[in-house]
Image (cartoon, rainbow, N blue to C red; front, side, top):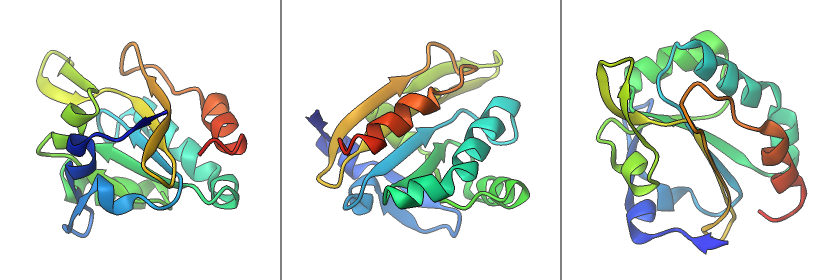
Length: 156
C-alpha cells in the first residue's frame, strides 16, 4: 500500500454540475477511481455499465465509484444519463489527475492527445492505494473479479 502523493490528492476535477473537486476531497470511504478514455465508446460504456450493474454490491462494501475521463462535464452528464449511471463522473479536462496517477495514453485514434488510459485505483478510507491496475492498451477491460476481491477482502 502506498499513500496518495500531494499531486494525486490535489488533482482538480470537475463534476457534471460544473463544480470543482479535488481527489483529496473524496477520501473517507473506499474509492474506486475508474479512469476511462472517452465517453460513448463501446469498451468505456461496457466498463461503466459493469460498475452500474454491480452498484448493490459496491454499496454493501461502502465503496464509491468515480468515473474519470478528459471529456467535458456536459458530455459526461449526457453519457451518464443515457446509460443510467448511478455514480459520479468527473471531468479531468485539464489532465491533472491522469498525469498525477501516471495513466496518460499519449494518442487515441491517431487524433486525440493525452487521454486517460483505462485504469482502476482502489483507495482506502485513509488515502492509501490498495489496488492499481493499468491497461496495457485502452481497449482492455478491467479485471472486475480482482476489483471486487480487493474490496471484499477488507483491504480497502
